[in-house]
Image (tube, rainbow, N blue to C red; front, top):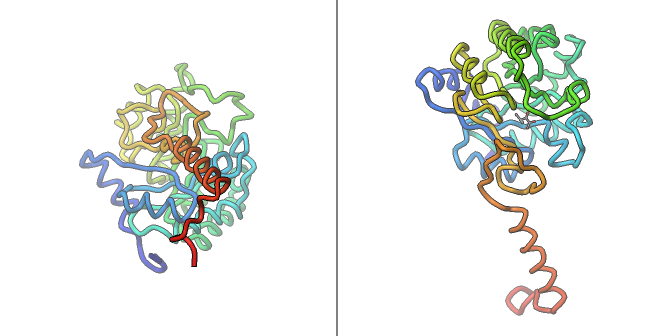
Length: 271
Ligand code: KIV
């Protein structure tokens, strides 16, 4: 299912049209070819190659260690698999902050080498120079405000953000500025539902929430959390649709038992 040279069915323009007609946007992370194919087949609108790969694929505590080369590897695997959803790739920590020139070269590498459709960048005014520079090259950018995991060492906690009015006002100002700069969509992570709804109502661009309530234009979850692969992570906003941790655990135990008992392979499972 190669997509080389083809535009995917969902475009940034289509997402804008979905918001205008009140159609909710579905978004899920993926990091590899096999899962991305299944997620595409299910009909998802947007796949995010999230830097959460640092946590769920590589076992890091934070998203900070993942490199540009590693993100490109994940993005290539996903982009190769899908033909319908828009493929958005996270710019990893350290590839865009404080240096717009480096931001552009990182962005161009991801777009060229991974055949992504768009990039996601965490932060507001503090990274605006980099966002404006990336946008000036014609690369679509999705913003990300609220809980921004790349800044975990600044905040020191993964608790709900923007509960106080000063931070809520700053978030609103950042959201307006990101739209004004030309971002095509915005992720809001772990903020009060009322504030998220206010942002979604005020902005023309789609606002996708994670832990931001139902008053926004779409929802995103981390794939591994949503299918229950990771049973140590249970925030209130997470709805688990499967318990794959237990399913896989039981399957592997059965496999081990079958080998130990000499039951596998059976007569029909050999040449
Ligand atoms: O990296 C990621 O998975 C994300 C989502 C949580 C939005 O940024």
